[in-house]
Length: 189
Ligand SMILES: Nc1[nH]c(=O)nc2c1ncn2[C@H]1C[C@H](O)[C@@H](COP(=O)(O)OP(=O)(O)OP(=O)(O)O)O1
Image 1 (cartoon, helix red, strand yellow):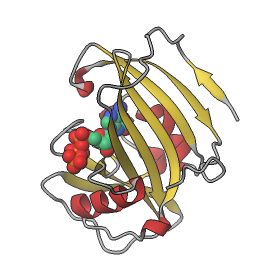
Image 2 (cartoon, protein in one colour; image 1 turned 60 degrees about the horizontal axis):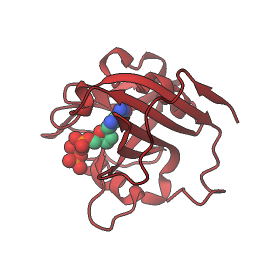
Image 3 (cartoon, protein in one colour; image 1 turned 180 degrees about the horizontal axis):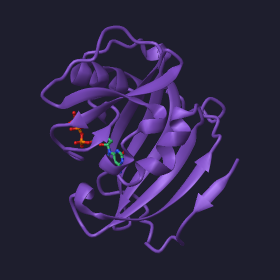
């Protein structure tokens, strides 16, 4: 297990978040003639509009993170995924001005049905995993997504400052842990 930190934690940690969004990201992977590719979306609305990311979004009702990732991937790009085929790859906490803003469950899968198509929310596009457009993504993505695309697991905290909305705040620091066994800690749902 490795641990990285590029700053000291400088913000007070609240006992309980006033409001924290629970969300998901899903990264479908495929092999095309020996080239490993990942499906990203260009987001057309909401947080991170205009940037690339995996399909995903906020949990609704009583659904589990896995069910949310399946639903969001279907709604945004039309791929069908069996929840059992999703592999838990990460847990990311995004903090804004010291408060917990979003807790995000990250999944990847090689098993899916259908061809991606655009929706009101997203334009899908396949990228070689060594050609991911990190300059058009959230600033934190380059810190954790390469590991996720290489089959590793990550737990990270990413700190933003400067007030809402999160996608206009400044990225200020992070902690990242790798090789986390989500099954062993009962958090692979
Ligand atoms: N710093 C960050 N880095 C990142 O890679 N993804 C982030 C992020 N902060 C938020 N997200 C992602 C997680 C989640 O998939 C999405 C949440 O954005 P939104 O609140 O706009 O929800 P969406 O509109 O996508 O979802 P729904 O409204 O539920 O469809 O943004």
